[in-house]
Length: 173
Image (cartoon, rainbow, N blue to C red):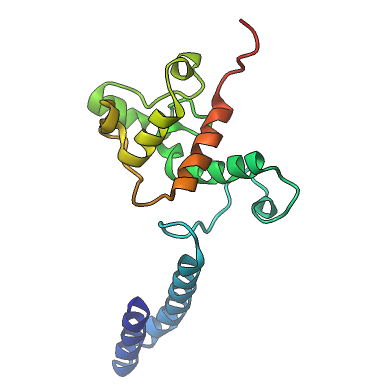
C-alpha cells in the first residue's frame, strides 16, 4: 500500500516534468522499499532497528558462542539505547537528555538504575509492568510511556536483563 503510494508519487513527478524532484524521489522510493522490507522481516512490532548502539559489536547479534543471558543483555542494550536513553541516560543514572524536562514538568527525575535503593524494593514483574503499561500503572510518573504495542514479551525480558547490568554488586554487606 505505502509502496504503491510512493510509486504514484514518482509517476506524478514524472508527468509534471519536475526533474530535480525526480532525482530525489527515486532514492527515497528505494530507501522506503528497503525499510519496509526490513520491517516486514523483523520479529519486533516496532520500526526496524537500523543501527547498532555504540559499544555493541554488530556481529554479536548473529554469531554463536554467546550464552542465552549474554544475547539477552546485548539485545536489551539495543532496545535501551533505542527507547530509554533519552530519559534514563546511557549509564542508567536517570540523567538523559530529556530528564530536565521531566523534572521541570513533575519535579521528579527518571529512575536511576544505578541506585541500590531502586533495586532493594523492585521485582522483575513490576519492571515488566512499567515497561509494558507505563509508569502510571504502578502510580509512578505518567510520563513513562507504555511500550506494550511496540515490544514483544521477549523484548521486554531482554530489556530487563540489560537493566540488571546497572544493578550495583550485592556481594558485600
